[in-house]
Length: 423
Image (cartoon, rainbow, N blue to C red; front, side, top):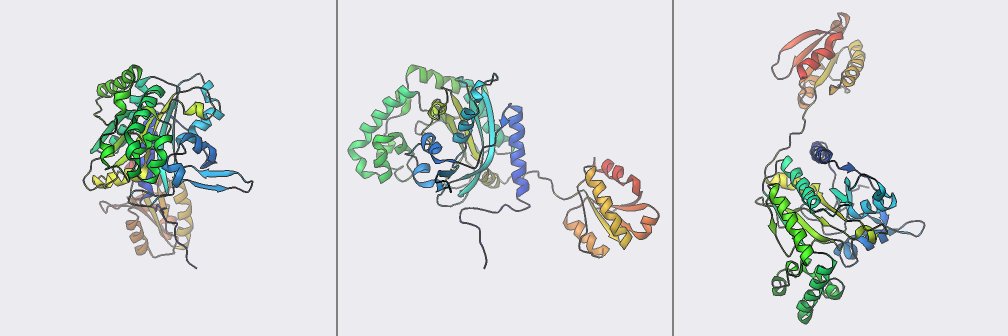
């Protein structure tokens, strides 16, 4: 019986994993520079957490969650996104009591959504995200957006577009909600079943519909920007001012509502403009959620964050023909000829590794010529060749694979010799 990988998942093999590690390390280093700390939450949570936070009118909750009953009869869901888990942890661990506010966090890990697999979209995918909890300052909105943009820029991406919008505060959203209902209700029968169900529950979700996005009423729908009260308008203007001062170009799109119910005020997406990237151009999305902590049972605490898909990021790099500077090859391959030399090579490789040198040796009992070919395939910078005669004389031959030059080195000096040349 043969087994195949489940649909919508992927194996990331050596040669590719190095790219993932480089991306993750770049993002981690930037987060450290911005003073964000890593948080790790469970891969599954109680289903109610996502029902309350993500919203029961969203596609994620209605169609995409992996939900099951555990042996205790509890409803459990594999996390479809990262924010709800981070906020749950913030509340449960009383991080709001920490004197260092706001709390600035980042995470990286797999998420799960049951949706139709397509280019750049998987049922198990990896998100890198940040969350800031405890600040009403529009400057933190700009900082979060700047961090997201900096991750992409640091990896070499150039063809990017930042789109922002404001959903306003509760008062603004309420006025806009009523305007949307009045706008759509006379012809709601022309829309899909999901939109019809959302009309009274959450009409803002209609604007996020993929099926009816070209309907004429979508084009003439009331803009949230026309319903922002003075406070919300000033807030949004501040965010735009900070972005401008930071030299970050952006476009305002009043139809940008995002796919989750917990957003208020600032929302944003970063898209790829690379030719041939595909119909789905969004790389990253995020926004402010000032009522989510309270919804999950904590004190009234503002928050903002974003999440990016590493799979989508890799696709964007490919679209722009960007090669990541991932380390290739090893530092030294130890080739041995003779029984005593083979035994000694185990010790030599161990010494090299302890000294921080990337080293390997033959484990297939191959001839020296075959070992040299193996070293070439591994892209070894140096090959240390040891025979029983060299071992008796306590020396080893080191070959520079770039120049072909070969040097006899005392065995006790091999580590220092290689460290000097690798430096």
